[in-house]
Length: 316
Image (tube, rainbow, N blue to C red):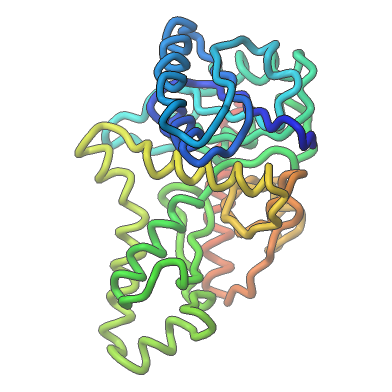
């Protein structure tokens, strides 16, 4: 990866894409940002809007509207394009509507000579990441989706509120499909070095266990509630994408719950699913395998089987 000019090609300048771009600018994450959209006029306007705020930022980022050819030397190609999720529509139902869109995106990016990392945010993100990998032919470790990164942030926020602890000291994950079959492996949830189950035993006992399940359900349904209230979600995912981008460009070796292809981990193969991974300049350095109990392994298998059925639908 180049060190002298950190470049991102952003495909899709809707609310998700521009929330991401805005976060990139305010955090000074990259040196160059090219905005690509089927509606070029919109991309031009968005670039102008961001550029007019440069004087108020600590960044000297180069921002402009471009084409797929401008992605040739990008470090990361970030895909946010796709049809919008309708109120009450499951992420899996978005699949076929977004397939055609991705075929028109990934092929020209690859044809440009792009040799960086794909980061996918379009829902259903695990399946769309699988599609991106299949179309591009890239090494699966260089193709990742946002997965359950935002779900994990929601969990840490809610758990921190419940336990009255700073969310940054809550170490718990949401894993599986970014959608209806995702779950929290509570056996692995920690506050600092103390397990959440031990904290429950010390304070609320069985009442706490019930509350944890309510928190898990609230995390799982959060996006639907936000969509019902304002038709879309974008700020949180934009910040999650920015965090993943920083981990890649900074070669951080940070642990984030992204959509990654499992290749033997948890007894699964060939499926992209949200799991904790070590992220560095090459993409996914490795999947960080959790010591799940039998019930949690069963839930993860159910989630993987749901995604595999989607793959089968693609072949029909």
